[in-house]
Length: 402
Ligand SMILES: NCc1[nH]cc(CCC(=O)O)c1CC(=O)O
Image (cartoon, rainbow, N blue to C red; front, side):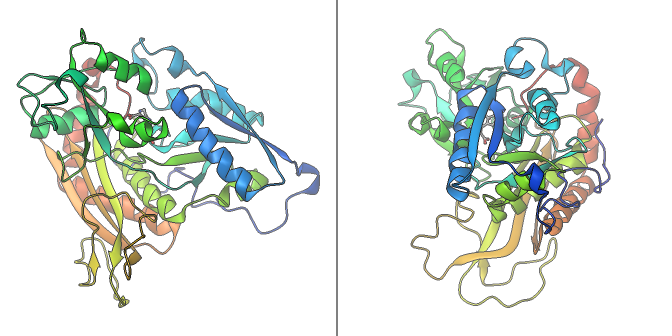
């Protein structure tokens, strides 16, 4: 059911001790080998490998092993996904192994990680975000003439199973049609490329394409300014799930956290948790740390407040969160986060949209910010849109939460 959730719910565990207590871990539980769980897709393996390399670099005296497991979600692409608790489907079996101690950590695409975690588990770390945007990939046979969504001929079929993507495309491109496309990235691209298939284009997360070495397939990037497409909560970032009672692993993964990414994605997840109440909904976001030129005065910046003169947004993407400084000279990131967020009806005809900014001094601030942005969206009618969607869900069928 859609509706407002209590912000103090279990969530990502940040209101509890997500950083291990300062006392040293019990010696007899000290160990050297750590077991990393992930799903079996190529993307999941690449992502686990990214985390593996980071951990090896940070902890050269420890051993890490990756276990790639197939999950019910992977094995049931054709069954009606709505029979399952959509997002939990991909994560539950790995979580059981984590709870049993057979795994020490799980690497997830953060966007596939439910915002409510089992009580004994937590979001232990988020690593540096890759490109958070969606990308349009056009069928090779028409790619020379169609460079954007607007270029696609009347009634072209865009392949995507994501309610968020479909709803936003309907909002801006009434000439397009949509069809489900499932499977891993390679499968989806193959379906697009098949001259017999109905798809003129598909939409994929840029980060996924990047990680599997397929950025050459991107026709164009989509964002708020390019195609009016806000990305999913957590998109482009990797989340690491750990046991709350395992201080040793928590300490290991704390070393590979990208704090800026952690805070911005905690805010996004808090927004989603506040709004969703259990079922995936078409929420889009774009979040970035405001940059400044020169000296920052320390005036307080609250939700909805105007930015100080010397703040400005990076043109274009919300993505280069803490990289990309090269050549930026005197500019650097502030601790002011700006979030653009929307909830859109499935037909794209009703939208609640807001932009807010706030100074974020700690993870709890990020969590609170997400909650505040959710309140703003509700004031603009998000709850009404979400209620309409939950009433409709019986006839919608499954979607992949992307
Ligand atoms: N829902 C599947 C999924 N989960 C994460 C990614 C891409 C990688 C990421 O967003 O970090 C994808 C594929 C896609 O949406 O195209």
